[in-house]
Image (cartoon, rainbow, N blue to C red):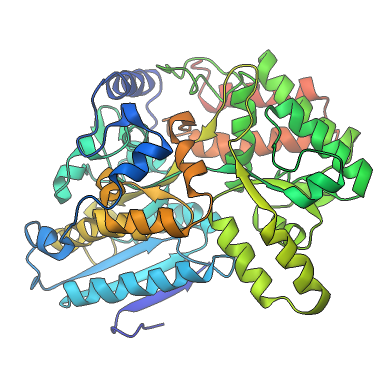
Length: 499
């Protein structure tokens, strides 16, 4: 389709470096994470809801004026871009901000012809793999944080660092920069940083005999609460997600795995070497056992968990049939939207759910409190793989505009945090904090964020091997111990026996 600014908007659903590459990645990680004062715009050592509120709204930014210093505003060119944008499951405000962004981009750079394709989250990686094989890729792409190193390691991405589009690397989270670094080089710019929180329905808690204002403090408590809710009320306690080949699954299971001391490799350690699989250690087995207990023993989670993504948790939650789930702040906005569409008795139930929505920190485990340091990164594709050639100036103008403090903040409005840390000082961040309920909670989780392993095979490990491990245990094709051992063996095989 073509938007009101005349920009084309379309919707639509090769050697590997092993030990040397992993060693270089680990050294780079250690270098990034050992810096005591990393960010220039904000002081990460003070990170807290109070500090974030104290800096919000303290600076103003001229996005067009800044990007003009990178690429003149009258530049004539063309851009092709892929990303995952708002869907039918997104809150209405995300669609409104998306429309505002494209209108502002067209007004700022009116002579850059833009073909931007909004591609489904679970289809984007496979579609990119296919098109790159045919040298038909876009110039720029915004990929989920998990996918970039796979393509950078195969030579598909250009080197790209924040300074190339007018921003200091120091204004981006170290964990986010780690996700765009491979073999000592930087291949992208973090667009947004995601962490999630535990969401619960206080009314359900109270009716089940639980403290409505106290979420489960530990993952063991999650199992206990989920069972009690199911036994007392006959509804699902926890929204387990275990679908195969879906990013939602590792984003919700890995925090549990890490909390117990497990991991795909040693990514949860301070200076990971990616040299040992943790999928079958004692902690990983304990985390998998907890999931098994909820699904098989207690039957306290949806029976459809094996095919569910987070989207499938939304309907039972707004209907008062699901008590707890892990998600972004945007879930609140989505529930408000759904309640607004409800009628009759459903409306009364939905309004009660919205009124009783609570957000808390993701529970702890014996080893730590953890959450996936998620989000997305913007990458430039090497010219030989781009259909129609690569327009460097157009791509840089666009990347500057998207990753500005303004739009980095606005485009993360309901469900994330700005990748550009300067965004936390903007008037828009202050507006977000004042208008988005529970934003403080997920922002507070950022220091507990753990990036997925920064290796090319991370996508297959997280989207295939980890969900398969869950499926093998929950369907009882294997015992919990067998499923964990099988997953660890698959990681070792995938990495060529290099572990």
